Image 1 (spheres, rainbow, N blue to C red):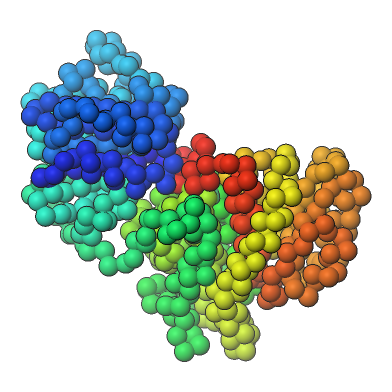
Image 2: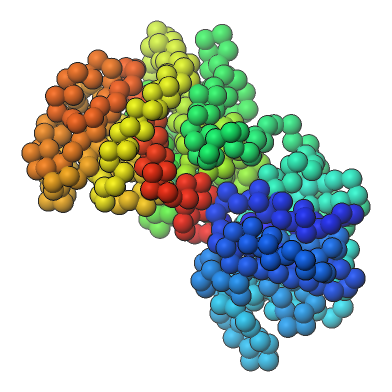
Length: 610
Ligand code: F6R
């Protein structure tokens, strides 16, 4: 989703802005632009399309050599992707330019009021209203103009603001959308995400809700929305942000698929010591708290939600507590039975997903304690949770998640087993046995990745299909949900995940000659049942690829056309293995179809609007 960057310092602002915007490309965008202040004049350029379009358009243009600037990648919400709807937006005076991430919910009311006062608008965006209102409040003091305008905006907004009368400063504002400041030597930065400037500085400070900052090359002052000065600490990030180059792979997605063994290792190793799970950072997540927990609620969106669905099996089996899993975007609009006896687990790679954040707040409002399983350190969800479990998967650049999914899943196993030990719901020997399997996961995933060529061969047979059904039962159904999402989002081929037993209650009418059915059949207890379901679809003309466990590979080859197998481990952990061939199949199908794998159309990595 939209990315913001800004620079003030001693070097050419535009070269930093372009480089930083490229680092934010992973968030997903459809247009980009920058504004640079040079000698009290704003110079602005914005283009629909990729950053290289902007880069090319900038070639030979003068006026962009200044030392202060703002930049933006836009993911369209209000108005189509176009040059005019792109950011930065300016007010009518031409003195003020802004970049915005978030949504101004009352923009129509504000816009109509401004139009009545004679203000002209050129775009369809909500963001232009921000520029227009600040512009109309401006009487020579830009900071004061911003401060006066802010209370009028409803919704979410991270802003970078530039004014040509103050060519040596930027104003940053944050409400509900992420914004982080970087501190260099005689130069300072703002960005939606640390990765934009981590090569330049590791000294950072995140703006909290309703905070703003006045940033110059050699000083930064922080304020609340009343304009009162506040103190904030600069922290040095000592964790590995991860490499954002492709490391020799054609796509980030393949690099990240291959990184899964090490990502899972990073998640679990620091938390296992002498045969015990040690969750040092989860202060107060102890017996005293857990003995009062009566229910676990898992909330997330997209693939993180699928982690929740898969984790339910481990959580229920181990903790013996009832577990509900729900989409964050739905949770808030019911009257969920959540109170102080509920442990709410919010799962999010980015830690900024607007629906998940809103659900977290709703859960807390109802009295629940919240555990966040998050990848991005210091993100909003991490900051607002009571207990934070970082997945430590490293930066994930491809829009379609793979290694973060695997790390999240491994995190939920550790949490489930940790809670079960405290609540004494598993025996000592079961605990040890399960912990051994968790420790084995990186190795077992590595083994699957060695067989990736086989999946490539299977993808070559089927990548031209128009419709794919993923079927499974129990924990395998949860894996199908993720497999189907991964497949459709990057290949643009229609697919659906179905609980195998449900197929004959309607959906089987869609099966015809040549329809591809991918059956996930790793749960031994349900093997006979899913085999029958495969026979049913094959009898109607479907072709079937099956994912199973090693001991069942021969048996299933009598019914399926293609078989890929993974090692046999307890079924509660099998999603970690079964998902890998599905990720590879999605990747290769998209590759063979020539898709933009790392940046699929219409998608954003960080979904900061509801
Ligand atoms: C799909 C994918 C998305 C995210 C979803 C939630 O490959 O990555 O479905 O899982 O947008 O994002 P986070 O985990 O950042 O809350």
